[in-house]
View 1: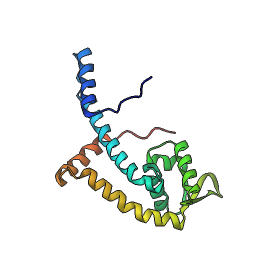
View 2: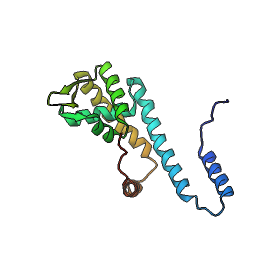
View 3: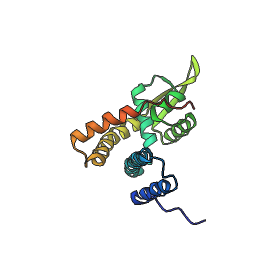
View 4: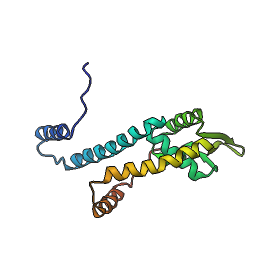
Length: 170
């Protein structure tokens, strides 16, 4: 099987048009908007992932480190952590293993509840995060650079209106 070609905006539009040709009585605006939303999110995610490569981290790993920092060493369960970073409990477990292997976090089981963990950043993890937060902010700023402050505010308002579906249980 030949390798798949990356989808472009033009290819996405052609796919929607092809669907519309097969189902002429249907309105494909929602699909078109959803594809554009997904493409934009993927683009920003790839941009951040590229910048995190030199630190051997993924965007999800960075989000986990931030959640760990914000939990301030307090007990946290994998399900809660997964909801915070929008991945499954199994994925969180793998990310934590990787962060622990890189000596960026340390974790221990909560003595009173074996399902919960006490996780904290190591000195190396704190140092790394101190560099990565500004890098992330700069990356997001660059990604949103084409939007005016007014457009950003409007986009945030619109996106919050559709972000009403609870995360699926893991």
